[in-house]
Amino acid sequence: MSQCRLCKKQVKLEESHIIPKFIGKWLRKTSATGYLRSIDNPNIRRQDLFKVKLLCKSCEDLFSDTESYFAETIFHPYVNRENFSYNLSYNHNLSKFFASLSWRVLVYLTEFLNNETSPEIEKCKSKLEDFLLGIGNTSNLDQYEQHLIPLESGSQSLLNTKHSNINSYFCRAIDTDLLNSKSGSLIYIKIPNFMIISNINYKYINKMRSSRVALKHGVLAPKEYILPIEMQHYLDNRLTFIKENITNVISETQNDKILSTIKNDLDRFENSHTLKIVEADLYPNQFIFRDKGKPL
Ligand SMILES: [Zn+2]
Image (cartoon, rainbow, N blue to C red; front, top):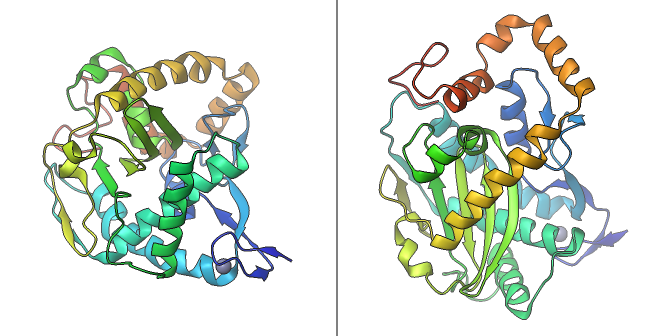
């Protein structure tokens, strides 16, 4: 018996995914090899995303409802969109889902990976917990608003011309971090095709109004999204770091493994999302495996 990290009951704990399981499933299904590799340890191939003992069964169920809502209402319709315009309506379940995701990531980073915490971070955790459990005033999230930025592959930006791995990162990577700067802190969550930014005490959060997830209902559609300058520097450094320390250090044995898996199923490779993304990264002006008029 251990204590559930959310409701604090002494119970048998479940293995909880920090990043929802359906995302790992989608990555495997659309990959060239059928396996996942993590940013931290690319030399190990995996079947699933990371899990920790965090929640009891009923808290886990509480999360899984809003998780399915996000998968069905936003994630799958967006990744399967046929053209560059989209218009996805959502209700209160979306802010609930992002609050649960941000809370999980925050707990994981500070309590399992020992990232430094602060009174502001602990206050944020506790407000998200109350919101998720329906305690106190749940009609708003105070300053701890959630932001969603849909990512489009092949878009023109400074980051795009500078980094040859940007499409792979935007469309296929999972990444989490706590961003601290002199302007305050943000929770950063990157899943395939979406960036989720959750406020802790960032001074200029009101400049990011266009990406804020409405608490009751709203619409996700193409618009001008504003990334804080600290986030742009962060992404710039992150993309360089990934290229130098991860993409370039995958071992020869693992490379051979990838190649032989691909050779065994060339059809899968040819139709995979991975190949389209690699083409977009390496040959931005060629459309052999991609369709020019369709998003990736
Ligand atoms: Zn619980």
